[in-house]
Length: 245
Image (tube, rainbow, N blue to C red):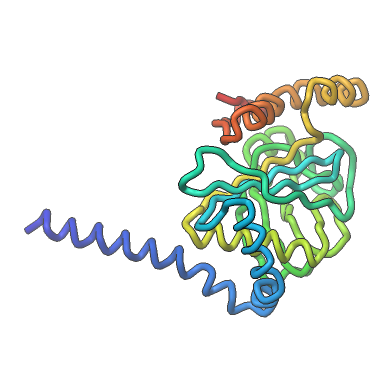
């Protein structure tokens, strides 16, 4: 009897989890801006997805490059072993310089390995996707200073440390994120690099920003792993830096 009740409880929890995932899109569509984004962008996105061989649910991964001002969107379906590049969006505006964000008000865009932590359908910047800054690396690097918070990929064309894409572009990115989340992807990675971390670029930028050399050395293996394998590396946070395993 006890095992029977445990089985019923497990099935109930599984069903509830599945419903909560599939309900995410339904809840988001109750917001006017999300509905508008779907009305304006989803049909074209579905056509583009089909041309790329993405005909079913997908996982989403985003990587941003500050120097180049690019946000790349990568997708992976259940039948694919690797992520495939889908689209690249240009930053609409930049803030700060190369190097990580270390304190509140420094106008820096963070650098590191993050994930989407919030969907904001009523953002002051049309639609926005929050990232989990500050993480433990950021907090340790900030020392006694407040590290700041509220870092988003968003619409509009202003920034004091976020990644603005314009309203039209965030509609597409937001819809893709909702679709991924609705399909069960609770952790949507967002990697933010100071630049495309090739050896040539690394030498160029560390010559200009030598103080960032050690930190950037902790970012580069994660960049190189994905470039080589098109799968996500295992990255852990250690003493103010990152370690790729």
